[in-house]
Image 1 (cartoon, rainbow, N blue to C red):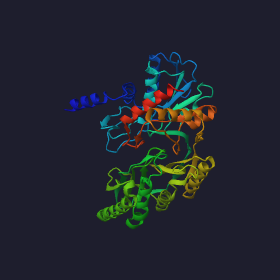
Image 2: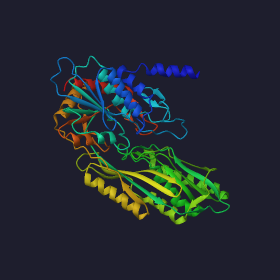
Image 3: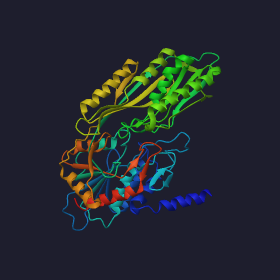
Image 4: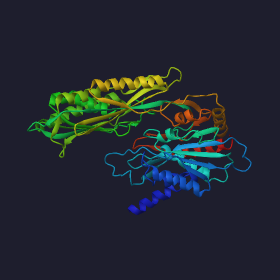
Length: 492
């Protein structure tokens, strides 16, 4: 039965259109390509392009740069670059057995949606990579001279775009294929920076007679910290801290460790605390936890209805616990440090201007590490938010370091490329595009900094719950994305 079902799924996926694009996406999904583990996938892209007769180079950081000659009669058209990133965010549900270092993504179809099975899908940005390869393969698209830039490590620092040298690309136009809503034409994005902190805690033996337990917060939607930060979703770290702040003194909890989140650009869906407590009070503690879970569900409402909390024994817990003063300082920090939208744009309706994401906490021995990320379309506001988070860290006894960050991409709605793509969309689909800037980061900011004369836009198919195990993409929307891409390439 298992082999029959597997065959049925593969046959079903084999009928997807446009066939060329989906062929490359299905093949790419078999190659592990989490950020910083995408070397094999990048080499695969280079090999596909070479097999198609294109000129291929690799730069010092591992980006793939591809050139293809113009279709007959289009030699005089301006050169256009297609750009996508080959890496993906690796998130899975706790119960899912999947090794992102070795296992292919298990794809499945549900009507018009393509999903993975308990993991992120990698449509972000595998669809863009697949589309670029399908364009390179095509002998019927009447395009001008082309470049394709496939970058590495976009999701954990944009290091591929950051390492791209000046003068490598020759294109006048760049089409970024990393947007996530059909019909939107993105012409600007926020800049971002990561703020990390660590703190030593004093340890002591757990009190005799107390037993180890684990409290887990789960069931939240999570999501992209730029795209979904304004949607009222719960932050598992903040909720866990709220429960501990309220119940630790009442039940005499002795904290061992905190863990939660695993990507700086993802809202944490799950978090847990290990602690010692009087086992005779377990039922009372569980009831108190479930009461708080209900309160949080009421507060989150339809924004994030799946919140759950679990309490159970933790057999392999270390016998060392944090001193109460240190445990309280860490919990206080998690409960109070800024998270979410700080300000909305006064100029663009519906656009978040500045935000911060409380992303990750981990415990290793006597060291607590916390990662956060800040975004803004205003460079000074981005840094002000980062400084405020750093101040909160220092108040709680943490040492702080900051990443290099990346620039935003200033919108230019009057650019000729914006007008061309919008006109092509209206001609193809009978309506104009929604021209907007986004709060998420795109590689266009870094590329534009090195190629200031290059005009850029970003578009893509509709996909949802990106950076979570619920990530899915609309199959029909991918078809429309392909129609638009082809029509644009035949027009510019």
